[in-house]
Image (tube, rainbow, N blue to C red; front, side):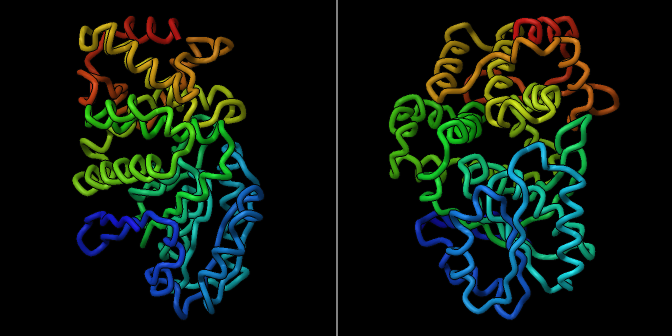
Length: 356
């Protein structure tokens, strides 16, 4: 068992990574003598719900199964969670457990953040993307047709329990989508990790257990350090959005139906790298390195051809990183060093979008 601690004073919490994480005493201590609602989806519940419920022992646990997919990350779905919490007479001492990927984690977390002005929740991520990124850090949200994650709250979990064995049942495409977030950590602040990923990408794509645990551990450690320093994204936490402004616009343009989040982020990171090259920060060899690693992870490096550049640019204007009408992008000074940048020519952004 690997254990990290996300340090946020009295709201600090453990991140457990290992085959027995769901059976750790921390789960029992957080749910004992409490009413528990385990939220999952139609794909994952048949695989893992029974195992998790058994881990809860004699806790008063109920389950809510939602539809699977980013397109269901809406206020309508959120209302179904509230309905269950209310009809089930869950109170302020109750606990919500998110069993699933990023969509379930975000929605369950937002419901917990807002139900009776905030109740406890626990993250049990089952996808690679959720294990290395969305389950850690307390960002919760639902989507709006005009923008991704535009309705949300910061609400830290009480614990994050990661069992890497759940990756064995993850479809290849979902696994690749998760790799986008792993690669992101190497790009934004850890050149050694990026180099390690280049050397071990074949092992990772083969889901070698030792390599996977290492990648998850380093990713969670990096995110925990960034969140501890900047919980509500006033500064360096924004670096975690490398590729996301481009990527969120791609997802919105497709109504969250075609590409997975990680696929859109992969293309977005490649676009950010090419824009960084246009600014004279990266050289062509570095951009090629980045593109090669993304492609080795079976991720796209260009936006879909059927999205009009003007639509993509318009959707980027609705991104959360717009401040006082100014779009801020996360760009790369070099591999392993990202910066927040807003002082760019609009023509340069348009050129990047048009090139895909």
